[in-house]
Image (cartoon, rainbow, N blue to C red; front, side, top):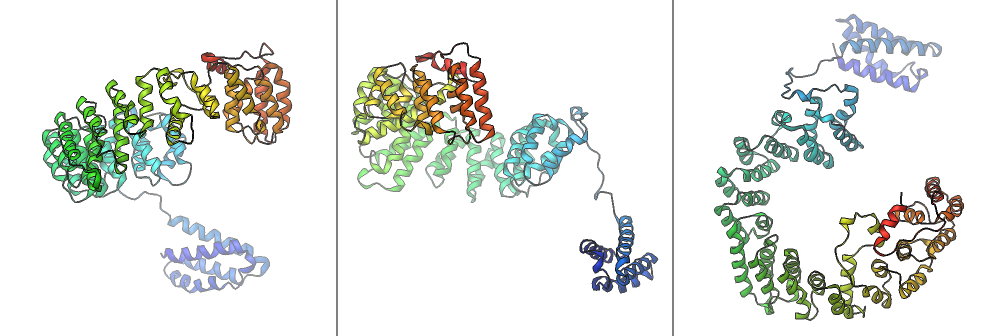
Length: 599
């Protein structure tokens, strides 16, 4: 029986159902199918019935056309229904459930949306998968095969979530599926499967890993070479792979060698550093724990430094020293500190071409957290005419008293036009945070830096408004007058600077703060409030209870219902306050005071 003729006829009938039966009479497309139907009718009478029905449609009068078309459609769909197949292709296999915990009582209707999200395409699937993970639906074995298949999902975020969270949470029960679905000639998804087989089954797949390293496609091979770092007995293979033509394979092999930690591995890493793979060797050397490798790198870096000629700086020489210094990250040895200090004391090295390396070396000294290193970096800017004053300032904060830091660096900040002052101000901003942010942090997350109280007066003098807000501690006439003057500049716009000023005034407990804030809100007319962030909501919640009614009137000015509702909720909370005047928090206790007023 020819399904093609039936399919063609079905398309034409569907077309007429859409166009209307009024155009069916004399339809040429239907007429062209009649000879084929009559021919097939010689062997199967049902086709003669179809041909008769088609002829009745094409010859029907307008008032009869709809009924004839419906009869043709009914007959055609009945025939097509008998030709359909419901069985799945392939051979049946028994599902092996190695862990009875994979059998759950979760009904399929609850699993359906999750399985669809794993096997289909389209937006919104990640949220369904995350929810399924949180609801522990992946403990059901019906999700295991789709979960493994999703490691190849075209949406990278889904594939990574499956790799990082979902499949590892299933445990060893998923390993047989990973083996069955692994394709050594595949791509990133199969590389993920290989990693998961290794992590979940342990280092017992040496044969599989070796085959993947030798025969696998690019992504799979790179993963396999990296995994070989957990097989000490295969060190020769890893060493061989570290000389491969493909750069990514060499990178993976060097990473594997860093984990092996043997003498031969250290030799190869050092060879890579001093050869063409210098860039690839840095991270593996940083991760290596081989005791002698660091000293070899220091000796080589010393030789490079001694041969360094600052008067004719060459790119190659700078790159050599840069790589050597980067390799020292995380190596908290006394010999490392001594070399870094020698490097930063060398006139030939301290030239503009090596500025990036100088900064990296200074950061390493700070990260080592050694008193001697702090003292050296603190003196760096004096040694080199103001250069690296940012690192010197950070070191001073760790090895000098707050008073000594202020006495030494405050004079350099006063002239904001000078390069040193600009650099110090930038550093001060990096080391501190907006006053509002300190409210939402836990106590243990707060900065451990102690600041001399004179800084805030300095920032008033040089009109550094944001730093005044960040450094203000106690009420002070000079500081209070400055803040009041600044908050009167377009307060109704409620810009971030205005928010900081109001927080600072609340912090010092100024009695006019609540009235100034309410006036600013009223002056805005509600025009600036398309949404309310937590800073504005927190400020409103700090108002005394007597401002509840005014806040409700302000809410009536707002255009957006969601924003209006938020303000009304704050107003309701204000009504519960026991006193008309809010108790102002001052000094160190101000954060606790603010948190007590927050939702």
